[in-house]
Image 1 (cartoon, helix red, strand yellow):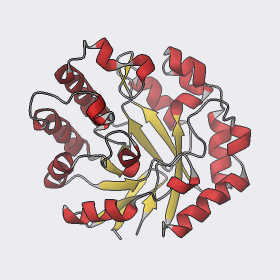
Image 2 (tube, helix red, strand yellow):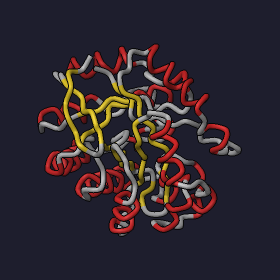
Image 3 (tube, one colour):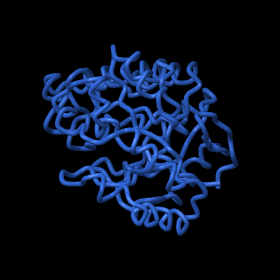
Image 4 (tube, one colour):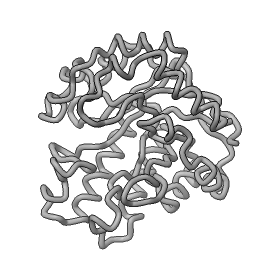
Length: 275
């Protein structure tokens, strides 16, 4: 079975109003792309910062700019379009109770947790660059990022951890750590395994400067050894990215001995054979 649960119905660019993208016609475009890719279950997980209700959780300037949509209308649209109802929710340290309240009030099939910000600084945006904030010290950046990832896993808020080593997104554009990356991976994987949360294998990294899957093979191997379950996703923002490079991702997973993927409904998880 193949799934794609981390999909966005609209691009991240400005001037992408929901009324243009949250339509039956656009949903059909994504569903047709999923059918062509052999994907049995398609789910949508828009960024939480797109929704006005997210400002009850955090009021970072970026969120204040972006948070204009109605979260309940979004959930109703996905259900009416016969798509799995998901959300990509950032982990914000200190806001756990507010995040839990936001999520519990909606009928999600699954919640994708992500770490885009460390403190007030962003891992994957130049505008709020964490490298600048941390004096361009890659070991500080990696250390803070993976501490945040471990906290996200242990929070119990999420069903899936998205692009778990997003910190590598810039590839050669940002220096890697001096220390062996396992120094940062191992505590995070320990927290992930203890929490029982699933880890996402995402092809989005192939479309980024790093030009490789999330997570790295070494990180994924540690997860396999710890008994962590996996999901498979494209992090598509366009229909043509649905199921992107899935042959490579499935080969990567089977090469690590991963034989099943997670399937979600009403935030309940089951396992299905991968393929």
